[in-house]
Length: 171
Image 1 (tube, rainbow, N blue to C red):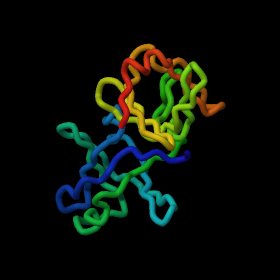
Image 2 (image 1 turned 90 degrees about the vertical axis):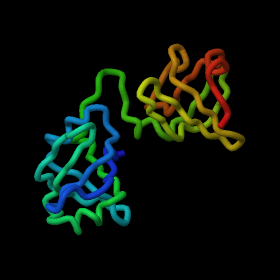
Image 3 (image 1 turned 120 degrees about the horizontal axis):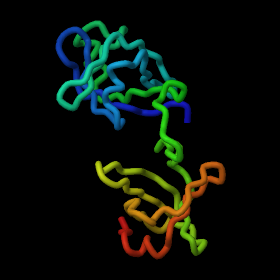
């Protein structure tokens, strides 16, 4: 994937075209230094220059150069804002973007395919994987010992069957 959703526009802020964001990133301070963001329209990504960005009381606010007033900002309400992979934050070693994990096959160490990783839920503590198969959906936290291996090249996440029995629930 070449673009990552990093925020959702909640509402206009003030009368000069600034918008308040719900962020999807751990380091919210990044919004103070972004040079551009993208919106998506009809399957195409549209680049917007960022005039300014700030963080206040746990929310990020940005002013896009082509968003001149409150009316223009209102048109962005509910839209996702994206960053391209080249400008995305660098990850620590052995970490992956959630977007790169979605769609991977999840199987246990007994060789049973559990399904496809459909969603990663960030709880503030431990991540929760939602895996879907034709028969059911399965939710489980990435508690210690649950995930044994993650191989993006092979498209597989290997899970401990024994630990999965302890922590998983059917959705």
